[in-house]
Amino acid sequence: MSTVIPIRAEQSTGCTDVVPLIERGQREVFCGLTGIIWLHRKIQDAFFLVVGSRTCAHLIQSAAGVMIFAEPRFGTAIIDERDLAGLADVHDELDRVVNQLLNRRPDIKMLFLVGSCPSEVIKLDLSRAAERLNQIHHPAVRVLNYSGSGIETTFTQGEDACLAALVPALPKADASAPKQLMVVGTLADVVEDQMRSLLEKMGISLCFFPPRKSHDLPAVGANTRFLLAQPFLADTAKALQDRQAKYLPAPFPLGLEGTTAWLQEAASEFGVSPQVFEQVTAGPRQRTEKALAVHRQMLQGKSIFFFPDSQLEIPLARFLQREMNMQLVEVGTPYLHRQQMAKELAWLPAGTRISEGQDVDLQLDRCLKDKPDMVVCGLGLANPLEAQGITTKWAIELVFTPIQGYEQAADLAGLFSRPLKRREKLAA
Ligand code: SF4
Image 1 (tube, rainbow, N blue to C red):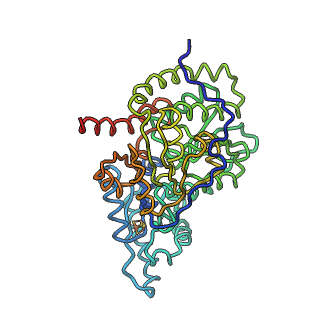
Image 2 (cartoon, protein in one colour):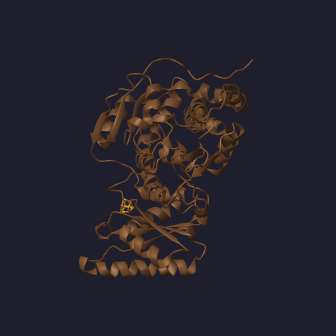
Image 3 (tube, rainbow, N blue to C red):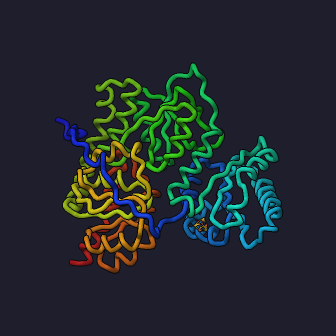
């Protein structure tokens, strides 16, 4: 007999019509440059050249410094500390840095110029610079640009901006090409391999975006159906829709339920029979359910508060509440994209406090008053909250760690149960 928990079929609309608490004050979030740290693992022949200040160089070095092998994959062209009259020089300087880089590194096939905050950079038209450099270095290198500026982006929006910039470079799919599934969002290779294996066993032909190499850019067109693997890709989704690809709205592949529903969306679109779906997913679902039970013992009944950070908050809250029986105190998100979150919102219990944006002082006051067992937040808030006796989880860890799909569901639960276990031990 199967021990699998079926996807609940209740008719409740949960938080579908939620009116979030909207806050527009000071926020404590990394900027979009941070995305480079996980994006460089994909498109392995790409280079990210941050056009920015010493602060940007420090951020990117200290955030990625631990990953020594990543260093040949990004750099910073420091162009602040110049006055307006020096703008012409800035273009020359940028050309010089890029020429030097590409001469030294013939392995680079794709170059992203990544914009940042300093006013000198904002005044510099990076899309024109990219066009100019493209003409110079074509066809050996493709030069693209996007903004990772902290004024315009929070940390996961850097990936969205990067992928959205890449969509126009995708080849056009032949109108007579068979229907193909595109999985969109940077995933760890191990997760990608598992998803590929499950979907191919169902007979679905698929590709991943971003690809592992720049010459593997997938074709896109009216026969493309795409699933988002990450919940922070609104601009990328729009750019793909502009190229006639059809979006398959699904919950995100976090946890047993989320992964099953995500796969189910593809299966329905590609006409996979319920028997084949069951055959392919029954084994992994049973293993996942068993592995999750261990963590449920530690997590159930515990309360959790999410500060807005990665945009993963709503799917994570849904997983922790429905599968781990945790209590949601507040679910903060930097942006609430209702269309992409529709299925997730419907799965959250009605009345959940959802906040959009941030006024960090007000939110800290609410959090300290609520005294949750656990808080998910950025690095800047974790230490002060820990000092107040609250167990924290760094949001950024959830972006770095492979957490999607069946085989990673227990690891995802473990990211929450381990710190609680540690605190219990310390308190004993
Ligand atoms: Fe650079 Fe702006 Fe990010 Fe600071 S917030 S590191 S100045 S892009």
